[in-house]
Length: 315
Image (cartoon, rainbow, N blue to C red):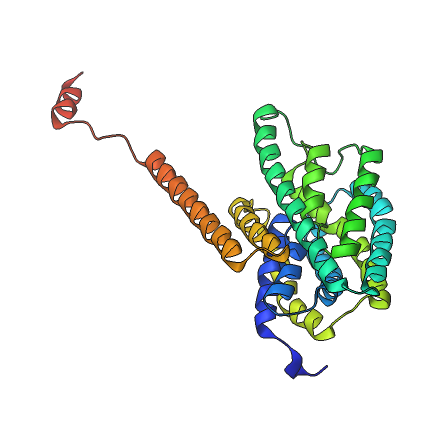
């Protein structure tokens, strides 16, 4: 590989994905893998393997920020890894077997589309759970790194997510965060994101080694992605303690919906309509929130001069 092989447009896409991961703990592979396939013409097989390798390098950067800030639940990381490491190995073996068959690219493309739909549903569920948790547990103290671990569902979650990541590269954030919130509704958001980023590291490192031996890695794609992803995830992780990433998650849902239907064979006009309508709805929501915020900050109407005179004349 030479410096001329670096694609700076792809690096820009990696920057956006890295920021999303650092801020919300989700959306990395869900953005990158479809972007490689639909925008840059990378084969689905090479997109999956290259993204797993790039993520294995990127996630430790974001995890290091949270480790330094002590927002990682090491008990959750350990039990999730117990399931996710064998899971990603099994998923990579399934991926390699399909890769050796005819029609591999179409099959992997379909897998990615289906998993994106699942990730979208998971994000919608997370939005609902977050709102519901605020109403049900509003007066309760959120739990941090000392929270007790429910071992069986945690290991099972790691196994399932590892399997999906090995097959499609998608799910280490979007699926993991949602199910963790379902199992641990009182887990503090910063600890949720920090734990998700950290638990992904051993799984992705093992997955990257497996894909290096069994997959189809494009080194130029990996390097181009990392040029953007590394600074993106670092600054995103640093900002995550001051910004909850809610509007970014809404935008990510729109992108996932549009790319999923495109990967599953829908016409471009359908995917484009979903994207345009979704962005319009999010924009309308942002304007409405801004108007409501401005109205609530306005002072009440000023008293009349007569009222001021009367009040001033009182002893």
